[in-house]
Image (tube, rainbow, N blue to C red; front, side, top):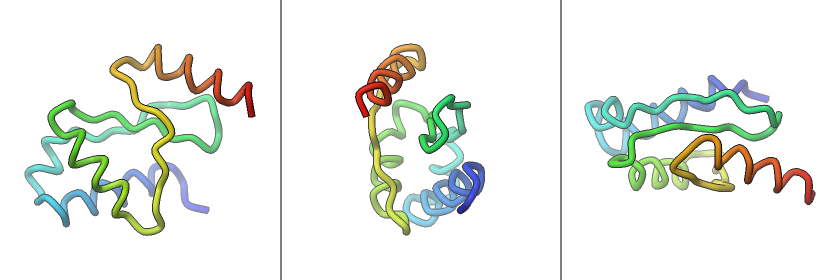
Amino acid sequence: MSSKIDVLEAVIKRNAELFGYIAAQKSSLRLIRSDIEDIMIVSCKLEALDRVLSTVALIYPPMLVTDMSGSLKRLRRRLNEITLIV
C-alpha cells in the first residue's frame, strides 16, 4: 500500500496533467496530519477546489471524498463523529 505522501504526489502530478503545471502549483495542495489511519486530509486553495475535486475523481485508482470543510477544526470533529458511528 502506498504511503500518504505518495498518494499526494500522484494527485499533484495528475492535477498538473489535467490543468497544467502552473495551475497545479497555484492550488497549494498539501497533506494535513490525520489521526485516523485510512483517511487523508488534503488542503488546497478555495479557488482551486473544483480542479482538485476533478483530479481526485479522475485519478487511478479512484479516491473517495468523504467530507469537506472550510476549517480543519470542524472537519476533524465531523470525521471523528463518522468513525464513532462506523
